[in-house]
Length: 203
Length: 203
Image 1 (tube, rainbow over the protein chains, first blue to last red):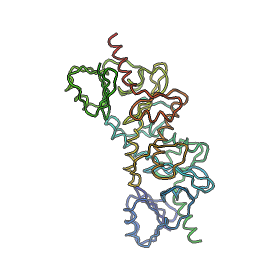
Image 2: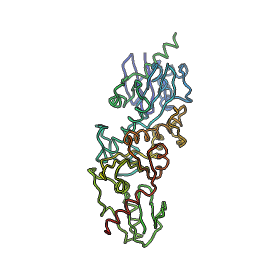
Image 3: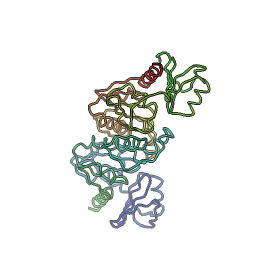
Image 4: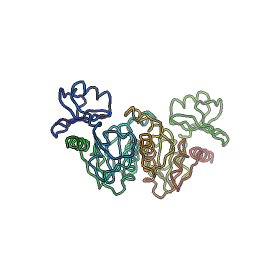
């Protein structure tokens, strides 16, 4: 079975349980079960794989949130209770309770934050260090912007999650999960939601 | 006496105690005491006011931070103890103890955060609502990005400040101060540091 999660930046494939991150879509003439937040890339997938199925049309999910992204729905769908953090181009923080989605936040992703400094001042146009110790007070500009950005993401997740379990996924999910005790990184969390949706369709 | 604080985006003048925020520098042939984080705007001021004095050359300030911006030095200089937040194009968070600067963070400013979403996805290209209630879970995209961004700034300041008093200044300082009980907004905080520096020079 071939699944595809089309994000803002990339195609993510799951082919018979193995995950492939590919900038380009090289799959052809297959029945791909997909979700997408990128209309242009959706067209690309469908032109190569006309028999593909958009799972957004079939998914069931309990939320009062208007316009919740299909990637967030799939990441949350298999989590009964806890906080779901999908850290990619954007970082979404969603709260689940008794399989009900209560709401959630969208933060800029780590790369987007890094880029944002560049537009403020040439002095702040520096690449983050990812070697961040949040217990140490920054004493250089590069520390001030790196610890500041990672620190504000971590502080927000802490405040939202309190003592709840945190499920991380996405490109920066493993990195961010390290800052939290009560956390787990699940690489294929979105695909798990897609698999469950397919099961529900076929049931 | 004419003071000028040249920021990343604007000239800020203090003329005989009154503050003027001007995009353009209209002062001519005056002795302006100034600080600057913008080389281009410094040239502009000096070409119109050749007898002006750059206070950066004279200021004394205790810190182990390498390359601390002169605006941050001036904002912190008159604060013996507490957290100093200058919320402009960037948001700086600095910690003072016994008139010693212990270190600090640099976050993107509110406008920079708003702009950063645009580059992630067209769906996220929305203007923030500033009517933010951080006790309510977002249930729309505009709430998710607004509460998310303001929330992460507030969460970071809370975490850094703990129970210390927080001194806000800068264009978004008054707005952010409202989220904190133990806070005060001081519009002319940077100018206070400049005034003290002038006193020290003349003493």
